Image (cartoon, rainbow, N blue to C red; front, side, top):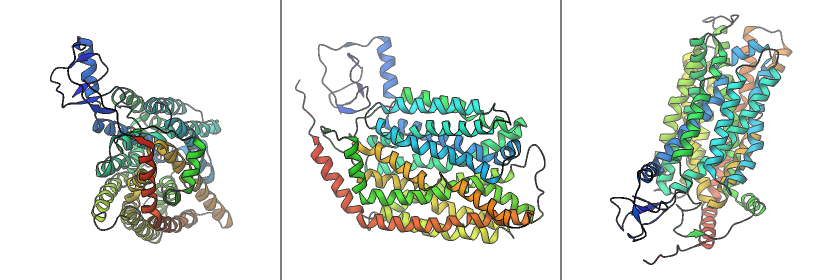
Length: 502
């Protein structure tokens, strides 16, 4: 493979080789020219470095960054009981942590979506990672009398992480197409459950190892800075739409035009509403399930209520491990099922999502039935319910890639993220905590009633998941029409690449 733009000829190049430009785009190689001269040592090193910037390596690095994004987000959930005891706040007060994080995340998402469609995406990604890493590290030194400052720091972390979630999928969308894009997006979105699970494990393990929960917030920043550096060096900046069409996009649309088009795109609207249902459930579960299971064991008299400075982290560790495994299974099964079902129907993507959502609601509902008697039974229901729920992460992103043209994908991803967080996990952790507190105040407080009140509050989640399944069924009705419209519009916006005579 040759490197274009260095002004030198690379050994081993032929006229049939491909050329990778400095922006990461691919073009046919030019034949040797008298203007080319032998590479100097510095040029050879630069060329070797650019050859490492393959699409597969870029997707791997972006997926690693996404793991860290979600790992940092759920590290707090892994030490939630310790934070609650340290700052002495109620259920609704501790639920405010995730709500403030998500609110800042969703407000920043449209801004980064606009920037991601118009400026260098990998620079924005790297700056976002560096920012949240520094803020997370700084928050670990906040004193117990400044809980408001700790809450504010989570809001700033949300802004940094928003840049990554809004833009990185669009780079993968421009590096791959068709089934290869589905597979790479599956790997990328595997980071959501994998990173979430690792966040619980990291938070619990770091707390136990150091004897202080603050150390749970001091590991992911180091890894985040590493990921940001790798993105700057090895991830290319592909031209928008290069994987979808052989031509070059010659027409740019305004932001207002993009928003009008997305609002009229029925598949995009319904799939975004379905994503909101998923976010509502995962946000509430990620924050409250470990605490719910800890209270269940107190009711069963297999554990005592925590009165120590460092509380038991067993439930967070188990829930984190389950989330990692179910995330892997869900993404793999989802990708394989969709590929198989595409041979039967072109509406496979939204239909697979709908069936998995409806199945997930059944097992999640069973968690609250069996938890009072059997923790093992609750874990089994969590395992099956999460596997089915995680089935649709990558498929939802692939639906967006099919029905939205490349020049507005970052905006589409950003506003889908905004919608799903606004209607989903921005309010669900706080809402669940608020309902739980209200139920506890209605009756005499006891270990049993604290357990039951949180369970009753969490019962809202299965109903929201069923609603999400209905939205995916609605997406299936309009999917083919919207995909065809996107393909026609893309063909109108492109022109064949110019030929170079030598």
